[in-house]
Image (cartoon, rainbow, N blue to C red; front, side, top):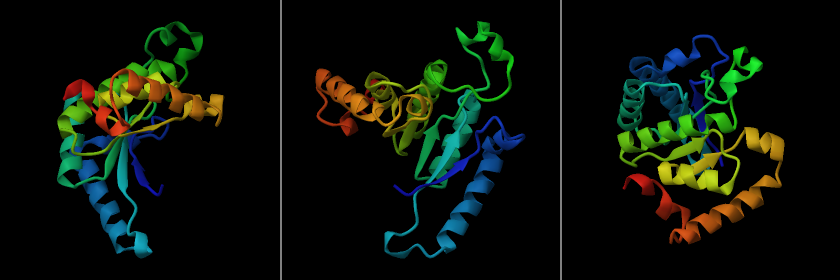
Length: 193
């Protein structure tokens, strides 16, 4: 799958997260859209353009991003990158004082809450990619029910490798069948429809 992702959410690049503000994000997306549209892409046409956001955003920040995404007709949003917060039980670990983004299981609830908020703010009109703390088919299913059309793995895939994928697919299929869904598409945003 070809995608262009504007990542304005890495906590490891000084000042990058400031680009998530309404005006800054709108200006950046317009420039990238214009550059993308000027290029020759052949028969397939231009790739979809998505923005990857942080999990550490306020409700107002999420509202601003949703407004930009809807106004500029973004092809999707990725929710979310790593967090600078240190949720329990990580907070007690001596390594929690280290700088940088935290990924993996401790990120799951925070990123899923952001996903839910963005699904509600965009009224399901924009594809959302759920990312953050997913390590099982059940986790993927929870992201889908919260509004994700797709999921993205990083930490679990890095540690579990390719063998994780068939296991997750089987678990996801069980979850869908258990709750009476015939497809993933039927389950997208099911918790909020």
